[in-house]
Image (cartoon, rainbow, N blue to C red; front, side):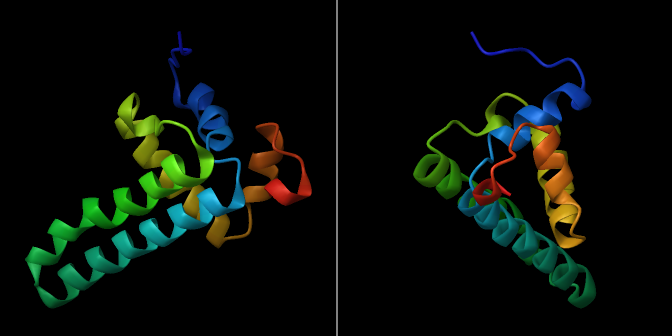
Amino acid sequence: MPREYKTFGEFWPFYLREHSRPRTRALHYVGTSLVVILAVAAVATGTWWLLIGLPLAGYFFAWVAHFGVEKNRPATFTYPLWSLYADFRMWALWLTGRLRPELERAGLTKPEQA
C-alpha cells in the first residue's frame, strides 16, 4: 500500500524521488515550458482556444517521462493538485539553478541524478 501524504512538505521529497532521472525531469521541463508559453500567448493575443492545449502539453511530456523513462505511475493520479504545484516548483527551481539542494535533501545525491 502506498504511503499517504498529509502535507505538501511530506509529499515534495516523494515527488522528487519519482522524478529521479534527469531525462524524466527534462521532459517535464519541456511540457511545463509549453504550458507557460501557451498560457502567455493566449492571454497576450486573446486567442483563448490555445488554453485547450494546456493539459495536452503538460501531461503528454510528463506521461512519456513516467511510463517510458522512469517506469513509474505519475503522482498526479493520486495527488493531482500537489503534483501540479510540485511540477511548477521543480521547473522554477530548475530555471533559477536552485534544484540540486532539493534533490540532495530528497536523497538523490548521485551526480548523474542531479
